[in-house]
View 1 (cartoon, helix red, strand yellow):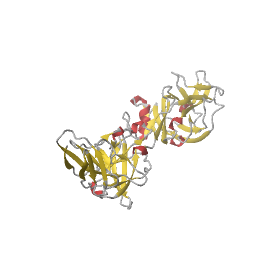
View 2 (cartoon, rainbow, N blue to C red; view 1 turned 180 degrees about the vertical axis):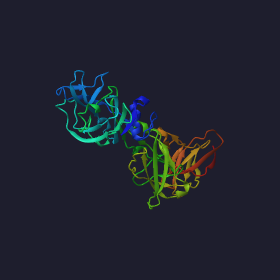
View 3 (spheres, rainbow, N blue to C red; view 1 turned 90 degrees about the vertical axis):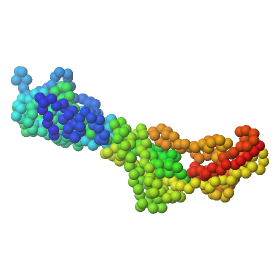
View 4 (cartoon, rainbow, N blue to C red; view 1 turned 60 degrees about the vertical axis):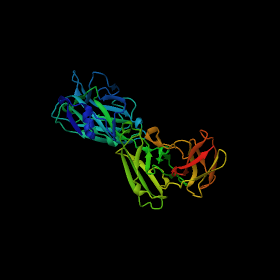
Length: 418
């Protein structure tokens, strides 16, 4: 239980946040703190046992024993109910009730208890007081008067829907007017919930080498960017949108024990987490698997589905080119099974570049997308195209082989005169 002096100008929210170890006035990473809406706040009075007193502006709430102007004796208890339904699906880690005193009958005496009761929907009367379930916290500290307090009510945060609190003076001194006091009408009773929602990986945004990852064989062969792994997470807590840590694990498919873990500590939910596997870890023609998980600093997701890929570090052999008929050209892979097709041009050979897509994910085109590309009839086989030279006389047709991963051979120049 934390106590703060009102005369020192410390706000109630400061007391509550301090109780949780939160730096006030700064945007926070997980866990998060939120005050849920109140369902009712008010008090019951033993002198008018069938009347419920809802919180009213400019009227402080009595607590404990007190006497009215006519000398009538009263005992009051304060009730506050809050709606916790907004935390459905979140991990509620704790709760703190803030109480602000307006006055005290005797500043040398203080005894306050906070109980969880059966939930109510409206302020009860003295006769309809809800059943106390458990005492959550208490204070007999009289260092500051009047004061602000933060009571630990974490044990009540498992309540579903609504949670009701009874604020009272302990039974042994509840009838003693010297322990009586009033609570402020403005933010006199507040609840702050400490919570967090776990992030998770979006499987549709798991990419390796610029392509969506494969979870079943046959696995994609990757050439350029073969060490690039990317993933995107989602987190229900908006404050975590730029405060996530991605952890990637990659290993040879046939040796799961040789697991390499790489981390991107600057991730979020709007920009993909990215790591690059060291080239020395990846062997040519090796098959590798990988997973990713994400943490907001409090909760860590499960490991994602497992993706796999095959590393290709070898360029295909250059093709041969021949022309057996006017304007007809045959490209030949010469039995090199790595050759799956060809690219050709009368001018400068273009590169099929990758680009940044949504969320900073690198997206690469399929190896045979785009103009001036043709598949071989079989791996290492031939392809025949009909082309019109750009001008009469001497022309040079440039051709290169392309393999399944998109790697290309050296370019072959074929001289042709029409």
